[in-house]
Amino acid sequence: MSLLFSPIKIKNIELKNRIVVSPMCEYSATDGFSNNWHLVHLGSRAVGGAGLIIFEATSVSPEARISIGDLGIWKDEHIEKFKEIVDFIHQNGSVAGIQLAHAGRKASFDIPWENPLQLHIENGGWDTVSASAEIFSSTDKTPIALDITGIEKVKADFKSATVRAIKAGFKVIEIHAAHGYLQHQFLSPISNKRTDNYGGSFENRIRLLMETIEAVKEVWPAQNPLFVRISATDWAEGGWNLEESIRLSALLKEKGVDVIDTSSGGLTLAQQIPLVPGYQVQFAAAIKKKTGVTTGAVGLITDAKQAEEILQNGEADLIFLAREFLRDPYFPLHAAFELGDDVKWPSQYERAKPRK
Image 1 (cartoon, rainbow, N blue to C red):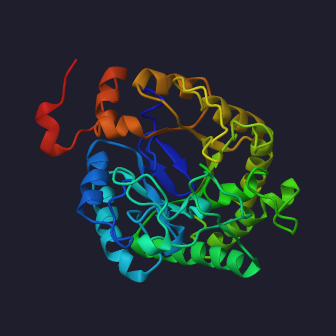
Image 2: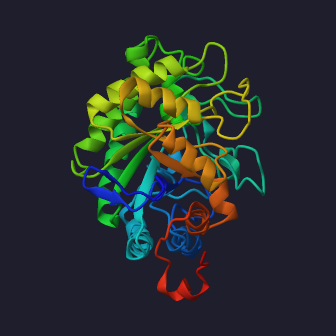
């Protein structure tokens, strides 16, 4: 059997294969509520054979949303529909995870295909917050630099969201600290100009993330996996870099984080990214080699042989797919056939299973 279709156990959760549906914003929620779009979208990836399905960036507070269409988990009423979707995923042999997120200064947007600009309060938007009063884009409003009260609220919101995720039945939580969102805004010296205990030195810039993890772990079952998604580099001079990511990953491993989901970029428009197949795999490989932590590779991974090679080379332990899953909800079933693995198809689809 290929490595791609070999099971992997993380804490007390066993994934039937190494294929992960990466969190992908659908911008299809109303007031944070999931709906039948999410049931069909995520449910079909479970039917399609993914080992782990991580729900899109789910906001821990209303102001944490990237857009008015983001999923939310800031109130108990959100739990019921989440549980329906989670139960369907588990009934079909996959594991359900959720990415808890706060967009920070990259919040308060409209639905992207309707209007790509930030919404102001008079148009249904809200004030944004960040590590410092530094804008991302010239068309954005200036965020409010979080004071200590605001920082405490962020940590409390992540903790409360975790309690709701447990009630909804999620087996994996991922803290979103990548792509230029709030946790990343504190990590990077490009966006973090603070002079207090949350700015300046590496130890200070990682403080919010470390304290958020502590808050989450107070309520998250110790036997369940905890992931963190990071941007391994800002791809920009003077920004967060791979060396800092390796240092952070070692500390996260000590803190009890089980998987580093290794992405990159998203913090600054000055980024220079070489978009080639597997362009971010190098970062997962470096972090895994230097720290021994379990890593996930993501970024323009589009076919079974490419995914298998990454695993065979020891560059990562999990393969996170995003756009490829938008193109093909049944990627795992097709990949297994390509690699010569005999995996179980849903009984309802068994008569269509190809045979070599």
